Amino acid sequence: MGRTLSWAARAWAAAFAAVALVQLSAEWVGAEGLARVGQWALMPLLAGALVASTRWPRGRLVTWVLVALGFSWLGDLVPSFVGDDAAFLVMVGFFLLAQVAFVVAFAPDARRSVLHRRPVLLLPYVAVLVGMVSACAEGAGDLLIPVAVYGGCLTAMAVLSTGVGRLAGIGGVVFVVSDGLIALEEFVPSFHLPHHDFWVMCTYVLAQALIAVAVVERNALQRRPPELAPRPAGSRPSVPDNVVSMVRAARTLSRPRVPAR
Image (cartoon, rainbow, N blue to C red; front, side):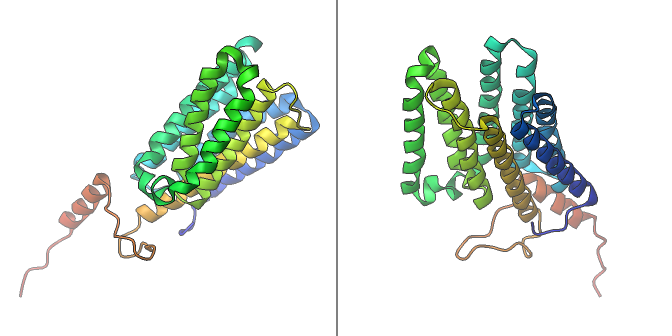
């Protein structure tokens, strides 16, 4: 990741990995209670790892990704405490807010994404969105418009994630797969995937982890002194954010001046 992680960051990451392994194993064998409790713990542990792995000032990207992880956690937790009829809608509502938070986090890097650099690559994203909404249209009924809105936000997140880095872009695609499996299971009666819940959680955990790692890498790059930060060939020097500029200015002013000879 470009710098050595602290012991606290390693501990949070190890705890996340351990709980993810237990949770996915429980999903595979059908231990619903253990799987549910494990799912509740995943996002707080990942958020802890993200905080411990990033440097202050963390800036917009880290802050909004933490907000997205918070809404994701509510989407994992709250549906377990409401009636079955409302559980799905509550889950979708919180994850819609999570996707919006991801979009806000990734939007400043839009010019680095495929949206600007390779617009032709938007075609697969659009094709998947149209295909998924079409496949779910008959079974969604009155929920078709909310499904389409969620699909649009999810696709926007996946497209903009490519501006953060390659790992984030892969994480965005995997997130689309995870939510696509949920939609197909919910709205397409003929769809059946063995160990469906396992594959949903497997892709969900992988997507969130890849995005978090990409954000850590980006934070480490942004918080390096400009002379030490590697630059892609042909790129212009990045402009530090206002907070970083203020911190550097304060450090400069606080240094003792050596009298001229």
